[in-house]
Image (cartoon, rainbow, N blue to C red; front, side, top):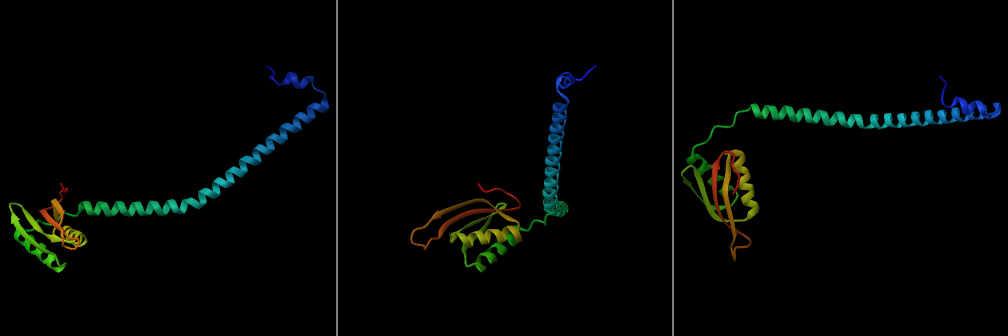
Length: 163
């Protein structure tokens, strides 16, 4: 069995055959040089990105370990509603908030006139220290109160979503 190019090459003069062979050798050499150059550039790119990828992997592994530790940590014991009321009132007073906080069933009802930044700070502190979350929260603008809002809220222990 003969190669399909054997017949056309056989018809060429010896000088033409040498030119075809040289041309094929040049094409093959250019292809090899181009491949080698691409491989070298890819190796450089990988060498630059590998340390960054390793650092990201290390951070993800640390975050995973931290999340696993947090999952293993039991939640703090729920506090009594009266103690939660006292802690919430003390936190409000410390921030200059004039709020009325009263226990109602299994929650605390909160009313008053507040500045929103101080309210957010107070709610974040209660979530962290007392595990109290806003189950419902209504803010209404008050006229003539220097940007304060009328607050009506219901705080419960543990995780909940605002309504």
